[in-house]
Amino acid sequence: MPAVEARDLRKVYRTYRKENGIAGALKGLFHRRYDETAAVDGVSFSIEPGEFVGFLGPNGAGKTTTLKMLSGLVQPSGGGASLLGFVPWQRKNAMKRQFSLLMGQKNALWWDLPARESLELNRAIYGIDRADFSHTVDDLTAMLDCADKLGVMVRELSLGERMKFELIAALLHHPKVLFLDEPTIGLDVISQKKVREFLKAYNESNDTTILLTSHYMQDIAELCERVILIDHGKLFFDGPLESVLDRFATTKILDVEFASRCDADFARLGRIVEQEGARIRLEVPRQQVADVCRELLACGTVTDFSVQEIPIEEIIRQAFGAQRELSDSGGKTAAATAPR
Image 1 (cartoon, rainbow, N blue to C red):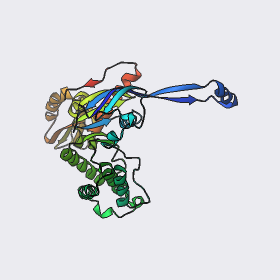
Image 2: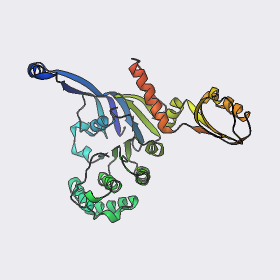
Image 3: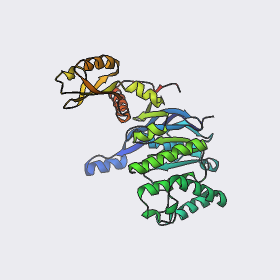
Image 4: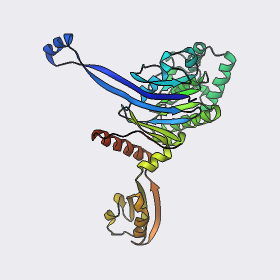
């Protein structure tokens, strides 16, 4: 049985449209007009136990709304879902004790208490055995290198330190499913790396099912073999990260340095990304790489040559751009699902 499943999940929000002026306000008292916005529009996917899946989309794509429905915080307008065999919005205690939702922009700890006492409150809420609690806190603080901050008031912790304790609080009851919504947002590079290393190790050692949303592509590249792409509330790709690269990475970067400046017409070979002195960077269609390489080698004496993939951030951006162009043009397409 899948740990997480969404079946044609939908969420539509109605917003009152107020007309201008006093007359419009009076009219609104008797005949109100509403706009409907589909935050999530027919999303379907399933996640097996132990999977670490990236859930990607631009701002407003419907990622957080989907997580809230799967967590039972928001009632869907249509469709169905299951979380560990439970209907999420029924909010049964047996379900709530087996999953966690961590939102990087929301605080779950008490600001006016030391981190240790905030964790102690979570222990009491979940009814965790004290010995198990102490063992778990010791293990997690050691993994995240933050044991020396347990006595510090939450409001006095740095953003990175606070996120570490938010993670510990979310994992105190050993959830089988963990929803992470932008857990590294705003963190410095070192803190991001520490959180990524922790999540990877925790997933491998505990077989925890994790669904991660992030705008930092380094998070996705290091942690997720599978990604789900969503935009305008619609899912349009579900499959291995490598398949995203194969499908949307239509070009490669050629980085060439000559022994001396070369005056060849590089523009006819591809898009010039950078040109400085005897060095040139070209973006070339994948199917033309071999031919362009031969022409570059014939231009002069080459001292350095490399063929590089487009950065994953750019590939994902292109994927969403292509999908939006299709949506704006009125095209219809089913979500692509790559074999896993």
